[in-house]
Amino acid sequence: MSLDPVKNFAKVTVSGGYDSDDTEITLVSGEGSKLPNPSTDGEFNLIWWDATNFQDPSDDPNVEIVRCTARSTDVLTVTRAQEGTSASNKNTSGSTYKMVLALTKKTMDDINNLVTLNKDITITYSGDFVSTITINSRQITFTNDGEKYTEWEDANYIWTPTYDSEGRIVEIEVTAK
Picture 1 (cartoon, helix red, strand yellow):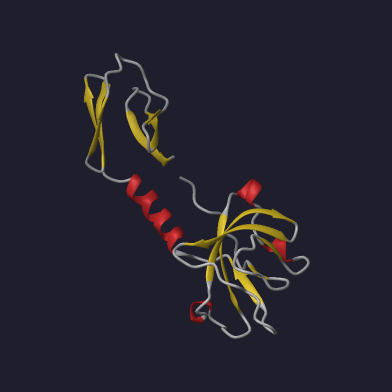
Picture 2 (tube, one colour):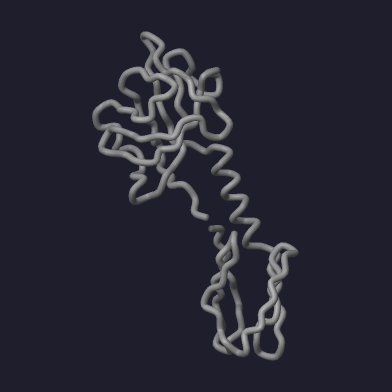
């Protein structure tokens, strides 16, 4: 699992109005550079709201979280209605719509999952070799006949161990798939 990219003060102005099914959103010229580039930095969520009538996005009854999956200069490709929000029209006459890259529940959940993945790890040895690893009460048993693992995985996680000079695991990086 990787965290969404972040950028300080990444607030942009949307150009024009959009219906609830539109997925290509044009920003005011030059605004796209304020955002991460999904092709190199990874996808990210944006909060989209009517900034004319609602200074605080959480006050807008039609506020929406969208996932930016691509950006070409000032044109974003988004997946609508993320994190339990609903896709809504963003076309009120006379309104300026903004998007901001801000902390959302998804970001907090991702951080919490990373913290949870990296605690409560117990390694049991049989002689000089790992016999079991217990992560958050989930036990993984090994029969490795003296081989050092550089990485192992299951359906949900990849474990990458770091060994000390005596060949014992001193740290395991756990990454969600």
